[in-house]
Length: 271
Image (cartoon, rainbow, N blue to C red; front, side):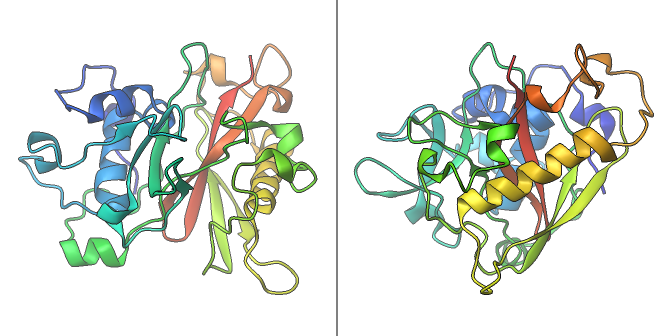
């Protein structure tokens, strides 16, 4: 199930979201999927609040992300102590464990928009059901200089360039044998491929290997498997040689868990 197109593409102003506003407007998830869809995903699928008509997350400011916490510049994060049922995805300068919910997009960057695959959209679930089905937080490909993302050609050889990555030895998808990667690129039919999350020794793969596998899938989609364009409403996102979107223009920023069995890449253009 997907969110309604009117919600995904809405340009209307967001209501007052307090401390969430900056993250949802200037973070990668908001610019990829739309601010309202990103809010629903982070608050109810990742952090496991129960969605209701009063929207307690907003009205009572239950979620108060810190911006640029020490050692985590240009990120929006919360303390792992507040959400101990989730997997930690970063360590701050004070050695505290943090959960990065999103990273800030620089003003000049163009993020690749997608439709978020949302199998649970519109289905009411209890707090216990949510926490039992909680998704891993977004996985961002943060470099040692604290910039985010690798050009696709570099990402395809990420294991060779692994010293570039901040969390070089991290195994972010530990516990899973494989997962589907989905791409829902504007103007094209949804596409997916299977990614193996264990190496030949049956060990969980490290972050550099995950980057490499995701990049290979994105590259294959862009070069060979995107299929014919079916909707000409988004000419600026048409796939092809310049001036259209070609693989050499794509920077791989990270992945977001769309469901317990699928991830989606977060991408931006290099120019």
